[in-house]
Length: 392
Image (tube, rainbow, N blue to C red; front, side):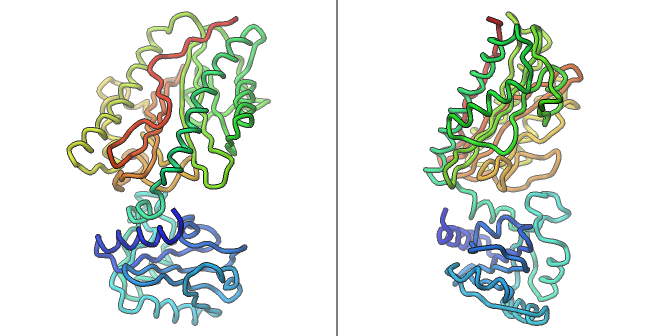
């Protein structure tokens, strides 16, 4: 969304919730939300305050040395120089305001939301307003995708689905040459370049016990050979190279051999069962008109795995927001690492990726899900069976 659309959407939310205004604070790029609601023409070095009332025009409070960077921002700019002048201007900005939303999470329950330091929250409170969390407001105003972004995401997701299967085939073709995890990762990176998609890190290519480290990445000097009888997990994420592209992120698993061993098949079936149970829960809730919070979706998958006796081996949240970053700013499916109370709203994308990490191997199955106005759907390829890798 462009900035005018963000302002319109944010004011719609503020009016619905009875919140007089949204105060977005940033110092040295600590708050990425600030840079979604306002743009500058260069490097900004001093504290900035953007205020959007529920009705009326937005305004910006910036230091004199940075004021020129916002000359084309399209909002009213108030300039301060000293701390005293900043306090006076901020007090004027908030005069008569009883409540403001800020990027603040009580007790830091949602670290992704909690971007404003405690001192600044104290300062704003000292001027009269009650400070409430912008958790739902922020995602509502800045993270609902356009149809073009959804199409871009689905194109990239389709490429990832093809590349992960090509990577499994590549490993099989080179088994006799003692191919390594790192070599497969290099193959994936080369395929990214050929498909005009990119990522600053990854992918994860992990055999056996390495797959039990959810963020394992092989390196040239730290890699394992892929052999007959190995379990192989590949997690890959990327976005298009065009400005404004958004990410896709999937994880698939394979076995090097003719038949998946009983133990690996059991764990795989539990993991995809938990994945599918969470998606069905979201579908059913939508059909019933019932809002779902991030932590509730996590609990469904966690209960599924726990009931099969593997709860202690599911060691991370169920899913994360997907957007301009692979781990983005909207709701996470998380009641384990944090307690995400944000609503799962139409227009956002997130992963569903339960995992079970045993000492000898790990299984994760990751899909991307888009919450449309008509309900949630998998927006990426979905793995239903373990891929079998056979040497050539």
